[in-house]
Image 1 (cartoon, rainbow, N blue to C red):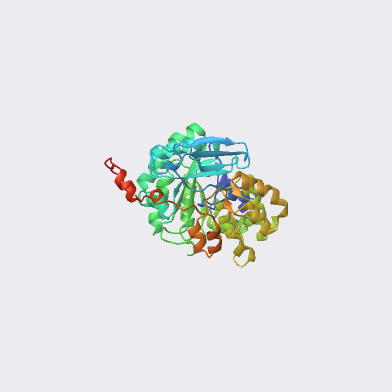
Image 2 (image 1 turned 90 degrees about the vertical axis):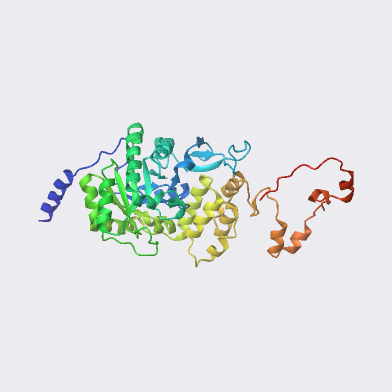
Length: 428
């Protein structure tokens, strides 16, 4: 009887409707993937997840306006493709000598056909403009309609789009009509469940009719926080609606390992699963038990640091991720916050074989390898004194400024200046 049931399922599966996957796109079905996470989804984190078996990786949400106006460059040192722009610093025309800001970075070789670009947008035209800049280098464009954080929702983006389904559908349709024919990649969307199953079903039916190839549902409502248990009561219904339309359905929320993800896929009838928090803490969660399962934190940290140095990741972001990867009760966790260079991190963690490369990366990033932070940075004597380093503060020679240098006119200057004073703009 078991072989007969398997045969029937196989026949039924072959007759299922399926939205065509564009030539340069990827099918989300059967995939265990890394969720889009701000700060935790930068390039070295994605490479580490792929190293341990993630089938696809989502980059962090990137707002359309931040990408529009960037310059795409290949970086021969890191073998990455970088999108950069001059920071405005409050001016309409940025100063020519200001250093470029890195907006987005990918590894074209290691992320090929694996990277999904997630866009933050609330405007169809801007979404298309931004997507065009990266569509030739990624395997898909995903619209963020699930992030509840104010930085995403303040301009009608993220989870705010769940309250404006007409706008959300118009964004997806614009991307499908303009990006898919030109670049031949798929368009998808990530949402949250609504308060009732009826509301969620109505929304999902509208979304799958826009021409998307995939839909990810985070099994929490917008007000819910990560510490609250995911609600999966609507999941099977959502999976059925997606299946009827031929759209792949991924689940997200309290998925912790590959093995658990495969069990949930079977239980709820979804096509794949997305891992977030668990991957942030230990990306070896993408390994099945048969392939080694979860690894000790120090092995994962070493692999992460190797990738971070390979792509010369911003040290601040690297240190943030290390504080997620190293368990809080470990002595190394308490000491890592004081490190200001890759060299000191490798020294602290005992990675002697990485020390030479760490010094090279520090120098490339204009960091003092010996833990003084950014090179050529002026010491703040007030901060030194406030931090208890009064002796160091006093030991630094300080040229005493004259009154005129401090903006105070002497009596002699007042009497000898025969010209009327000009109006001075006072900053407020």
